[in-house]
Length: 163
Image 1 (cartoon, helix red, strand yellow):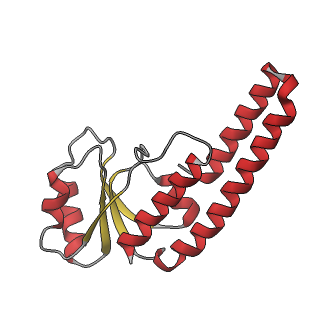
Image 2: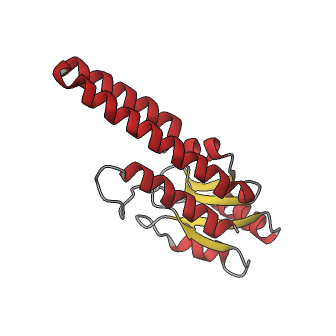
């Protein structure tokens, strides 16, 4: 999910394509340049968009956003679980609930693929917002510009819930 890692992957993919298909080297390089430019423009815009909420704490359902969070300097206070299919333990739930009651967090993010009732029960009565992050990008078309749309969707989700 991190822009830096995506650019690194795109470079490796481009180099591999050129090795296998050198006749189209210029097309591959042009596509990479366009991708790099698009990512740089999108990340510059997202940095500005997210800057006002970088200090606002939040919890995520699972620990899968680290590269994105680090790149944009977001304030992740923790996660319910490391793996979405693993239930969070009582100590984790108590710790998150305490942080919410102490107003340390602005938002708790769930995911459309794993919408556990536990998020709602932990947030209940705290006044903390519930947002949604979609790490699978289920609403993003598989086409040119899809990664940029994915970054923008994540940015909007963070911005909306953390305000």
